Image (tube, rainbow, N blue to C red):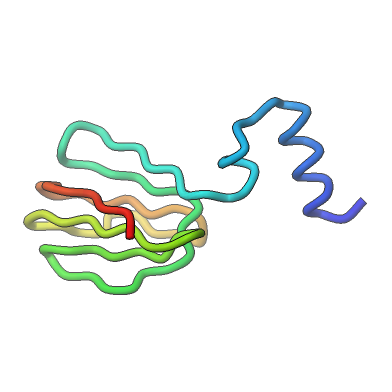
Length: 89
């Protein structure tokens, strides 16, 4: 079996939601000060007032004040600060 076929078979057997199987972005927010986004593709722009990310199917724009990237890996990014708005473009 190829790698993607194995992942799909495993995801189906675990009965994961379809958006998880397709690699869609998963956003988890803790209060108004911490946001974790999984399955993102890259950073478009980054300032203390705005973080724009490429995700499957579009972009996510996080707006606020004193925003910073605390953790960044190939699959996950963690943003903290005073988060005012999250938009999907």
